[in-house]
Image: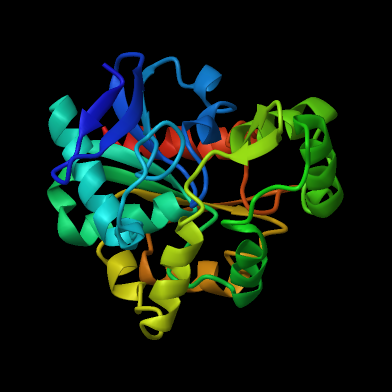
Length: 276
């Protein structure tokens, strides 16, 4: 089976491969299970589970875009764990996935064995938010994946200076689907409406209490050296609040590391070992 059904009737897609220590991989805001394609060949000794949130990838789109929220997505993650009869997992959360991991640490700490945050923390740098809002929920103008990959390389190349043409093409294919009439997004355009509605509802919540809920757990943080989401100052505060935290800065990466870098793999394996 590749889908499960939520309490409100949505069919959500997941992948469940391998055997061994369970590693639950949660993707970024607009992303999907393809976020972990670069990591997967290196995780042969793990049971690797990844999911598409509601409104993303191969999962159903919600009729109410207000359910595109971290609390609801955290509930969906718990439902997936129940569906798979997994009592406890280590979570690898990329960006939005890391926020969900922190929420789960506060809501259901007994379900977590460890957490790896991929380029995210309790404070999101304003410049990163502005960049995200420039593209999220906007239909692509490019007509082919090749054009989209070239545009991504032009825009993000300074933050990822050593990526090959093939990698940029794979990143574009993870975001867009090529059709006879052009590209379409692999997520619900109403995700933008959800973000705008949440912003209009008031100032963002203080996420430090959620991060503090991670204190009893083995925790690792990956930061892209060129990240515009996780600042060095926020990472330093995270280390001060969680003395056992393991942090690694990944060179030649912005938001987010691809997870196949030697620095990323070393940290992931260290947290998995501590979480056993």
